[in-house]
Image (cartoon, rainbow, N blue to C red; front, side, top):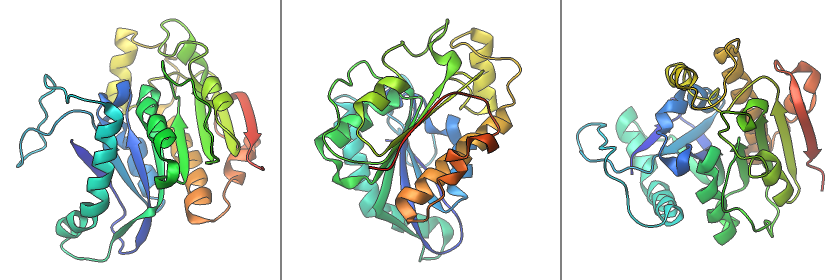
Length: 268
C-alpha cells in the first residue's frame, strides 16, 4: 500500500496520526497534504494510507486501475503493523541520520468521510492500538454498533455536506458518529462549508466545477485549512501528549469560522 509520511525534521520522539482518506481510502492521502503537513508541523508523525497498491519500487507511481482485494480493515491493520516495525528506519534513511522516533504507543486514528468506516471497524475489533480518534466529516453505511470502550474523539461536520448534491447521507454522518461514540467526545459542525473543503485547492476546485459535492464559492480554503489543522493539533496535543490545549476548541468565540453546532462531552 502506498504510504505518505509527514514529519518534523528536528530529531525527537513524536506521537503518531494514522490517517485514511475518503471512499475508504481510495481518495489518495496526498490530496489532504495541505492539512496533514500543517498538523505534522505541530510535532506529529502523520501517516497517510491509500487503499491502492504501489506498483513500482523506484517511484511514487500508482496504478489506479488496480484495487487491492480483501477487507479494507484487515489491510489497514497489516499496514499499521508494517509501519510500526519499519517506519523509524525509513525516516532515518531519508534524513540520513537516526533519532527521529515515531512513538506508536501514542497513536491516534484520523480519517475523512467514508475513510472512517474501516478505521472505526479496526477500533471495534481491537481498540488498544489507538488512544484517540480524529473523525473529520465521518460517514458510514455500516456503523451500527456503539463503541463499548472509552476513547477520546473529536468529530467535525459541515453544513453543506448533507445538502444537494449530498456527499453525506443525513443520519449516517457526523451526528450519527457522535451518538454512537461514548464520552469523552466533542463535535463541531461548521456553517457555510462543505465536504470537499478539506482537500488541497486543486482537488477542491475540481469538486466545485463538477458539483460532486455542494460547495460555497466564497470559501477561503487556506483559512479553513488553518482552522482544521488548529483544532486537530489542539485535540491531538491534549490526548496524545498530555498537554491540555482544548481551550483552542472550546473557546468557540475565537474560532475563525461560524458554527452550526457544538457539543462537548469530554468530561466523563
